[in-house]
Image (tube, rainbow, N blue to C red):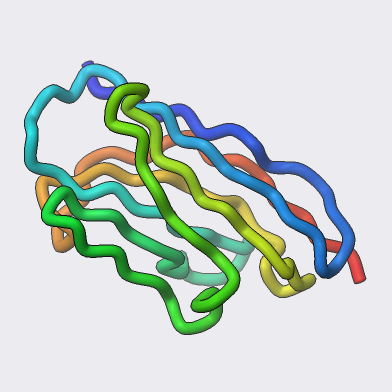
Length: 117
């Protein structure tokens, strides 16, 4: 059974940093895409960043230059380093796994990020 478990969320002040982690288990294929999305209650999910096993990383316009996605294959863990956080970054952050970056089939429970001004 595929499982994604996020961690690392919390409350920080504007300008601060957090590192989110997403540990994957139960998926052994060598080809995949993992991504971070975020969502605020009442709003649509927003793409944050993705990491494809072909080496491609993509960032949403609102986080470019501030967030960095990386992966530790040995630990099956996806990371999101978030720097220069802004109040508008406050959201529930979800990790998603897909056969490709066009098709995700699994999502974690999320980790909450709150940034105060």
